Length: 514
Image (cartoon, rainbow, N blue to C red):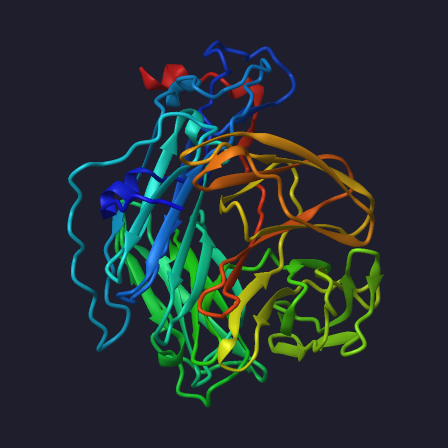
């Protein structure tokens, strides 16, 4: 694929975000104080945070920014409109967030050079691509407004072909929050795991980091009150936070006592490459970890019970023809406050699937968080990726940076038959969108080669929307072989929260602006 390398701010201004804020006005700006039922309106302001992609000088990073074309409450396509309500300006921009030193002895990298020609996004429905190569590319913070806000997503994909951090690293840039769980982290000697904390706001945030190993909480230092300056990013190396013996399986809990941050964990393994570990879905009694590749050579499940009760979990694999109990591990006991892990050898046996975790006793559904460490290849040809537990898609979810070849979309229906609509957007450099309807049988995983836009040029986005039936969980695997290594990365699809329910009695607060 032919690409044009953009400077850092050119990359930044081409991108913006998920989760947001809806202006408290009716779609036409008129008052609806007499209405009784709440209205569901598109969000009109969104925030997004992308971590610094790599420290490798040979890193090649691609950003793909996209918001799906939606419909306003009158049923008209929103693409191309100027927006609604008080936040009507259509705007999408991201700016570099300089790295701040995270611990004694760590020095932030040099400030990246500035750009000369910014790139802009003007309407939903068409993805925009950009590049930032080398090891000086910074973290990014930004906002989207108007019709660019609902469902905005940005995929950050980095190829590092050689060196200690070699691998394909992919992450859907995250929304700011105050609470994150990361099972499948590690302080082992062969691992370098960094928590990247990025602050999008005008005031400093203060974050706390807790580490939980197989025996409980790890005695740690410098984990309370970590300052994250405004519009900056702080990388924290986990192994420097504790003097205890290295632990192969650790759960990381990030919270903020002041402000909010975006958090994602970067993993580099001396033998198995590198990738990003996003946060697990919120603690729940049952979890779905979707999209284990059919040729996975190693799968390790890591779980943590944050409450006061132990969790006894039943392990099942939802494959293309049904749900089975793996012969290698049928259950997992997770002690309260401790991280538990189990290897699942020969799990997929040549068929893609998804892991289902449910309480062994349905009457005792203890909330847990979980993630999978997945390896493809063997020996010096190994490549690593992570699959955190993912919530079901309720309205719509999008993943960007799909290629003409190498993408696999996994759809899992754990409870009942489900039908979804899959839309392939236009390409970054041309192409016509296409739509496909997919039905997933109850208790199965359907792994498909996603539809490709007609006449595709560049990369494109995939949007999944439930049509009927039970809940659906989804992930996208992007595989880009390099020098005989089956490099890959997996992104779970999370609901884009493109709309928000607004009490109709308060839909018009314009008097407060006078």
